[in-house]
Image (tube, rainbow, N blue to C red):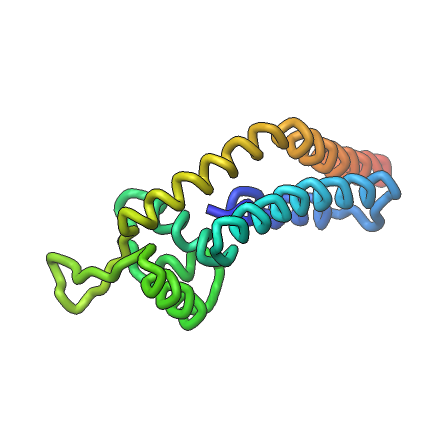
Length: 171
């Protein structure tokens, strides 16, 4: 699972659209800090994955396969949707991962027309090593990420409260 899946800016953006007409300098600073913290983690991730001889998208796909929720079948369509990529892009990633011995395609037991994806033992080992590095880095970076997110959310709430006060005064 990518950081983009974990932290979606849509709810935060919605807060700013609840009547807040103009962003303050502190709002821009909070947005910039949040983006900086996310980018710092993503840069770490890119380097860690490259050091393992993989592409960033390949790691993301393997993580998506391993972390797929119960009841969701690991088919190309589901993986592409969860990664927010096009079907053909997922197929290309899968082809490269399969060629490298990291994943395999399997026919579903209940419907032989359906192709499922699974990690190979090699894929499991590489994913575990990379995921441990990512987990450790997230634990290290968490205070800064959380502080940046809190700052951003506090600015959004402050703007909404200010707009509500203005509305109450005009009523």
